[in-house]
Length: 122
Image (tube, rainbow, N blue to C red; front, side, top):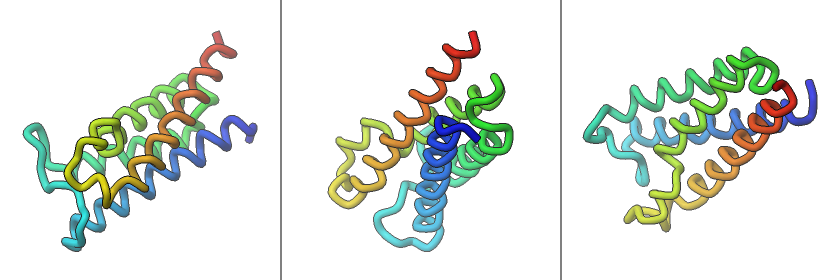
């Protein structure tokens, strides 16, 4: 496995673990936890789908194939629902900032590695 692929894989694992911990906090009722629902969907099914896509990206290699790169970017976009810049305005930001910052760093790493791999494969 190449070093960029390791970086992308590590960042995907970071997003997976952060989301699983959030889902566990929601299920256990431990604060702070994400809201149970948004206007568009229930958060637990959404996090489940997001984690599934990130795991799929790991399985098919996040940078090696077009499918892996697409799944990696989709995993980032879905994770940013929980860790995106909008969270800086969340009333609970003082309690959730470590996860938000780490999630954003992981998202940037994945995005940068996928863009670099895409340029090399064009």
